[in-house]
Length: 370
Image (tube, rainbow, N blue to C red; front, side):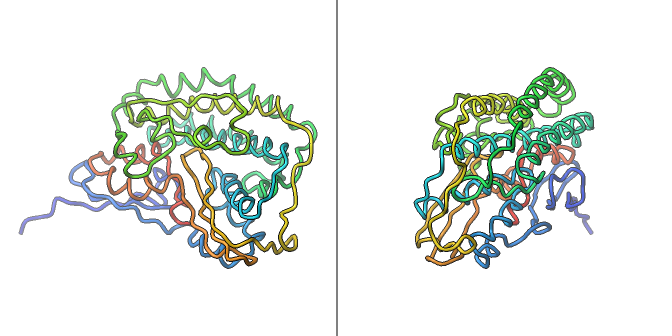
């Protein structure tokens, strides 16, 4: 009887190469993946249906958990949707504080993503450095919001409360420190001969395939397309600050995490401008519909979106005029590469490169388990 050459392997959910609680079922011949399938469902499930069972206000505590590394983007798109449906005008100072929060979240997310290269390559110094530095960003979040991860700070109408006294100086010192690490990060990661050998030419994503699958963010910009919603469809006050959109043309793993490194500098550039231009004034306004705990949002539908650290992140919100959403659909930024991409693009790679493929494609499993 002829023996099968095909072997089934499991990567995750507890494998250290899996970036989050998910699993990839791989069918391999020798060292090469010939077929793969993403198996979600190990983390949070049913966020979208849960939101339909809760009031608009109750959802403020639920939505940040859809994306743990960068929870504030959920608060922002949810607030933007409600503000559009109710015609609420956000105070000017709140716009700038929101931008500050979103860029601090981007900084923390990029540091974590850069450290994620270490586990798949044996470069464990990198996550030790980046996660320690990310913890300093979380210190700032704790001072501003009272929490390190789930902040529930950006709310419909503005932000929950004003910035605490002295935090702007703390942020400036943090930025100075992160900038002082620039040469160390570059020498350890970008100029590392082993990292370059492992990642150059790996997991190449071409422009047409990226656009066909709906992939955005760094993975798309690594193919040469400078698509960033902060420029294409500005929100908050991104049209009032100056920053560049780093791009590459190789479309490979090395290009993707290199762009994250360069985006850290642009994020610092934006935050410094926010601190310089931050106006005085109120930080929130009342959402004029119903009581404080039971808003009644006018009937209608809206799609709001922002540029997360992984690409376009959006909410399609439908209201029937009641005190809770009729329907909410989350457009997770990493959904295309995390679900469709695993089946379409992962085959053809070697087993030892799968963890690197997942790390540089930078997908967040809760965005699939939503």
